[in-house]
Image 1 (cartoon, rainbow, N blue to C red):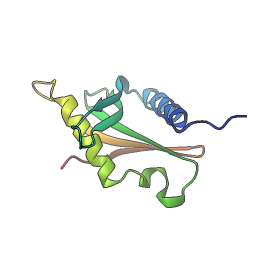
Image 2 (image 1 turned 90 degrees about the vertical axis):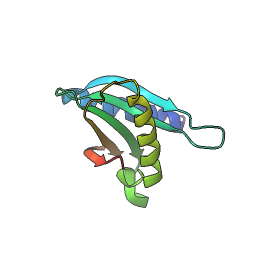
Image 3 (image 1 turned 45 degrees about the horizontal axis):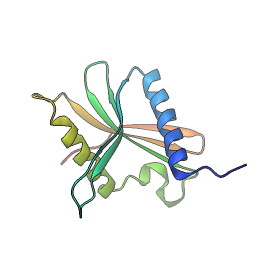
Image 4 (image 1 turned 135 degrees about the vertical axis):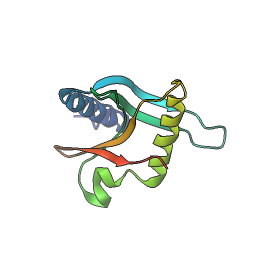
Amino acid sequence: MSKQTTKGTGDDAEAQALAHLTRHGLKLVQRNYRVAAGPHARGGEVDLIVRERDGTLVFVEVRARSGASHGGAAGSVTRSKQRRVIYAAQHYLLQFASPPPCRFDVVAIEADTLQWLRGAFEAE
């Protein structure tokens, strides 16, 4: 039995999160939206961009942890990570003449438990 890579674990967690969100009526718009910030600055990434039935665009950060140590999956979404997600979301929204309502959610997966945190953080 081989140990799964971090990327493989992340991909599995994103697939699990997406399945959960689609079961609740959200539709996938884009996966892994990435934007670079420059040669010496860190860019940003949004794991999942989904749309609610009412048109709200939801930027989702997916975090998976084997257990709750060190704050667990939800606790691993630091302020720095939030800023990178917000940066990518702001870049994504540039394509809209009039951006739709938006929200930032976190899907935290620990062991066999999935927690969907709607409105987990806000853009400043």
